[in-house]
Amino acid sequence: MNQSPFPTPDPNQYTEEDVAQLVHTFYAKARKDPSLGPIFEEHVLDWDAHFVQMTNFWSAQLRGTSRFRGAPMPKHIVLPELTAGLFERWLQLFQETTQELANPSLQQHADTVAKFIANRLWQGYQMSNNPDKQPVALQIS
View (cartoon, rainbow, N blue to C red):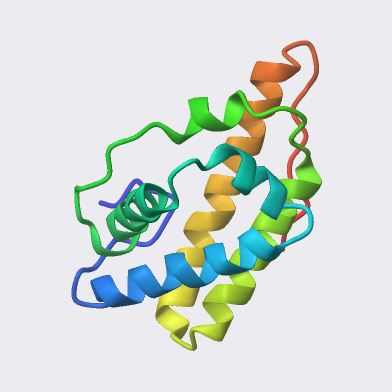
């Protein structure tokens, strides 16, 4: 029984090329975004390595591969002055990207994972940076 909040990864449903296209298309948008771009440009020091890491992450989520090694939460918790609006913008750009790729199955799967991740990172960020306040959920559809 699948206890995960997301769909079961399926290596037969998406190719590595699908995953790489998602990652590269999304980050091309994010890097140009007026609110997200400066944050990524300041904190991602090696874009080639970041693309490999993010492709491995999304390959694990979508295809069930096991190449991803990392801990996203600590990297996000230490970023200064993140807001719910930034996480919501990240998710909006991500969903625009998945829609443009015109693969409904990948769109549904990746968007479900992205919503969960955005909420989890935002909750963790709030609990770490404002431990005396009750975390507030993102306003996402």
